[in-house]
Image: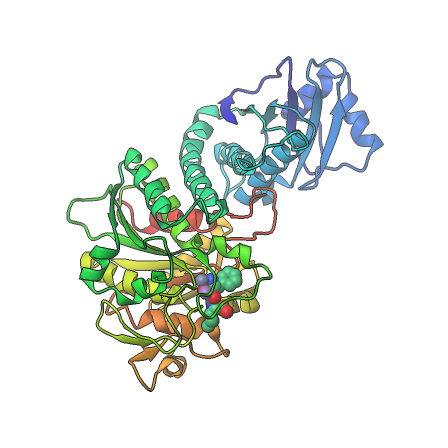
Length: 495
Ligand code: BES
Ligand code: MN
Ligand code: ZN
């Protein structure tokens, strides 16, 4: 869908929408339209219960006096209460409605919505952002599309502050591109997106200026990454470590670092998972997908920051060479790990990826993202991701960015009492800490591979995949985390 911005005008074809504030008074653009239609808008509102409440829509088909196919009145609630999220949901709802009605070209007038927290140009830009996010689809594997909603081709946003809105949206568009990359990676089936194919797609980020290196098993072996390699050893597909670097900051300035779990498929290994729902484990690379989409967004918008993204990409399979419960592996850090359950594989991948990142880059902070535990969904559901950290300031910055972007995180406790649950009688540690506090003992495991760097871990098992459908997301893979971390960088680590 192509999105453009212009002054307020009324086209001669396609659909027209107009944002209506609560009370639906006939002022501004709405008043003009009411006059053009000989008072049809006022009469329609009187004949229904439409009052302009947020989320409500009134559809006037072929309104007299206009050449458009339909006029949609889109309620936004009180202008004083409007937020970025309100406007994005409205843009998303518009696209959902028009696709259902097979309208492929539309215009929306955004007039009279601004307040102390939301400038008029941002209100219009967020409508466009929501529309864009809603327009995503992943239907490349459907050979018959005839019953599906028809994709929209063009959306024109009419506003008195078109230049400002266009500028704000040009950044949003790049963030959306990053999110779409993340959604695509999560949605792809595991026979298509195996580790080498993931690495190939990450390499394509070089076209936006990201430097990409890919390490194969031989190189990881040399580095001593026994923890990561043990997870992939039961797979026919070669494990990969991908390092992405965007240098938009001052030369020599320490980078910020993002580390992702990229398990392209998680069968559980020898500790095999039960069949029900196992197909969802194609999304177990959601952390790595988020890091890749984020690096794309940062580079595309030329963020003034040095950033690295490191992803460990493997497949967890049970074959004759697979790792066993009872095996002891040596990580790159030198610490040894007794494998208790081969299904607790994500932490094994991250152990080496985190150590490698800290040692090579000495970053300002490391944030890892992983679909790490089912237990985080038991604790938080799908509304919040779990946040675990050794740093209060970084935690606060993440929590604030999450509220602002509506990708929320909730900080969970950590401490020595949890840490001791992963002591092993045979090795330095074991890879599970029992059922109690399962997400926390997983985080304690990760912390043992962080020496002195500010670190946060986001357990995104509930937010990265099998996402609830919303106004701005209809996709199984949500792209969660790209907006959050882009905002964290923009607010605190640029310039
Ligand atoms: N990838 C899973 C976690 C997961 C479960 C993500 C459901 C998304 C949806 C992870 O590798 C795993 O299997 N974790 C185990 C850990 C346990 C064996 C200690 C779990 O959560 O059961
Ligand atoms: Mn697992
Ligand atoms: Zn997993």
